[in-house]
Image (cartoon, rainbow, N blue to C red; front, side, top):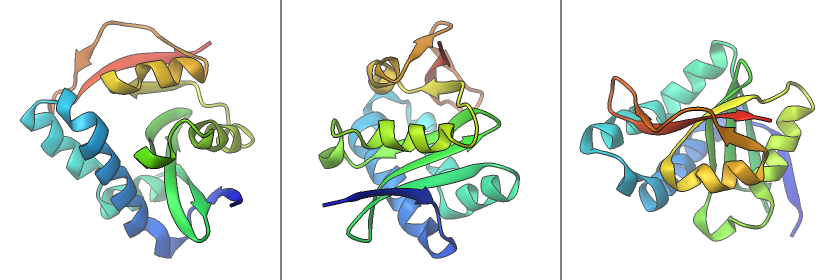
Amino acid sequence: MALEIRLIQAAEYPRASEVVLSTFQHLAAQYQSAAGVKAFAEVATTDAIVARDADGAQTWVAVIQDTIIGVLQVKVQHIALLFVLPEMQSRGVGRALLKAADTQLRVETVNASANSVSAYMRYGFMPCGAEQTSPDGIRYVPMQRM
């Protein structure tokens, strides 16, 4: 099965949102407060992803056999979203998404959920501060690419 990495197409935003939300629920929600889970759900809606792209972000998708298995959204060199379906993790999908983004811009920062810090470290990011909580309740570790 060939992995294809490309910019998202208009009709794919709803599926991209599903991938992000289902992966978050499966792997990251347990590290968030109820307010954080609610706030993240709003950030990951189809409309929110589309709105960030309309405001200058770029979204790439990882596709196998016409099925989206991963999503990366970058805005001003900052990762807004990077999610790969749990059953497709540890297979180079996240790294491939970052590599595709790096061909157009240098991805520099991310606010990582606690469960994803080690993955980002493998991608060359290092924590640059202690765990924080955003005003809307999302817990994260700020990281910068070295």
